[in-house]
Amino acid sequence: MTSSEELAALRERLEGEGCRLDLLFVNAAIDRGNQPIHEVSTDMFTEVMITNTLSPLRALEALRGLVVPGGTVAVMSSDQGSISRNTEDGYELYKASNAALNQLMRSYTTRHADDGHTKLLIDPGHNQTQLGGPDAPLTPQGSIPAVVDVLEAQTGAPGLQFLDRHGETVPW
Ligand SMILES: NC(=O)c1ccc[n+]([C@@H]2O[C@H](COP(=O)([O-])OP(=O)(O)OC[C@H]3O[C@@H](n4cnc5c(N)ncnc54)[C@H](OP(=O)(O)O)[C@@H]3O)[C@@H](O)[C@H]2O)c1
Image (cartoon, rainbow, N blue to C red; front, side, top):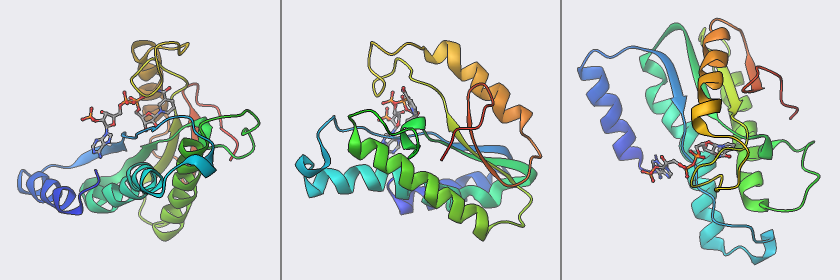
C-alpha cells in the first residue's frame, strides 16, 4: 500500500493478465494507539497519515484504469472519520486520518466526476479485528457480508456516498 513502486508493479501484472475489475475496494489501515494528538510523535503521525490517507488514494489512482465502465471504486473508511459524530474522546490520530481520507475521496470524485464509476466510502461498524480490538460488538463474519451487499446494491449509483453496512448515509 505504501509503496508506489509495488502498486505500479501490481497494476502492470494485473494488466498483463488482462484483468478487468467490476469492483476496486481498498481496505487497509493502521492504528497506533489512543494518545491525544499533542503526544503523537511526528514519525507516528506521518506513518498513520501515509498509510491510512495518502496510500488508499495512490492505490485508487494506480488501479482505477482496470475498473470497467459502470464499475465501482470504494475505500474502507470509518464513522470515526465523521467530523459531526466526533463527540467522544479518543483515537484522535486515527479519526483524523479517516476524516482526511474522506476529504481526499471527495476530491478524487470531483477530479474523476465523468469516469462513470460508482464511488463509495464504507463504514463497516466496530468489528473484532486486530485494529478493532477483542471487545468490539461486531465480527467481520457478521458485518462484511452486509458490506458486500451494500457494495453490490450501489452498482451504477452516481457520485460519492459515505455509507454504513446497512446502506445508511454516514454524516460527514
Ligand atoms: N475493525 C474495526 O472496527 C473497523 C471499524 C471501522 C473501519 N475499519 C477499517 O477497516 C479496514 C480494515 O481494518 P481491520 O479492522 O481489518 O484491521 P486489521 O485487522 O488491523 O487489518 C488491517 C489490514 O490492513 C493491512 N495493512 C496495513 N498496513 C498496510 C500496508 N502498508 N500495506 C498493505 N496492507 C496494509 C494489513 O495487512 P497485514 O496483515 O499484511 O499487515 C491488514 O490486512 C481499515 O481501513 C479500517 O480503518 C475497521
